[in-house]
Amino acid sequence: MPSENPAVRLQDIIENARAILRYTDGLSAEAFGQNRLVYDAVERCLERISEAAAKLGEQAALFVPNVPWRDIRALGNRLRNNYDEIGTDRLWRIVQDDLPDLPASCEAALRSLGR
Image (cartoon, rainbow, N blue to C red; front, side, top):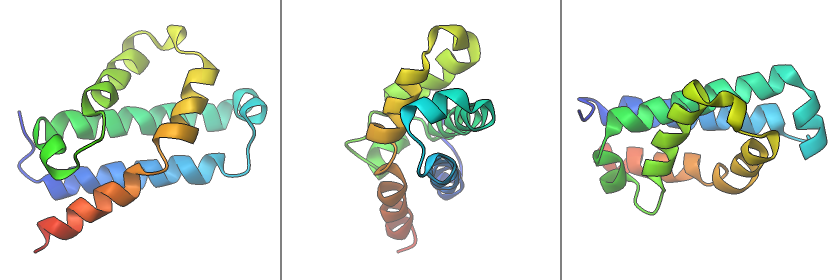
């Protein structure tokens, strides 16, 4: 079911993505894997991003195209149900490769919603 207020969900994604980027700033993959506090925080923020994407539903692709929304929603399910099958290296790749552009893309969508 699509969100009644997509701006709130986009803001949730922005805030959690930014938090992850702050938590991991300056860390190496090895340091990330050894810091349980940061690892757990990143996992939880990714779950929130996934849930916000789920609440946006198919609207997500309309607001922010070229983002793998299905994969984002699926990651949340995997983190909740199969957390023991997701390796540190996979989460690190998400943080390094997939996450950095997400906040700016969602911010652009928020600006377009404000018009």
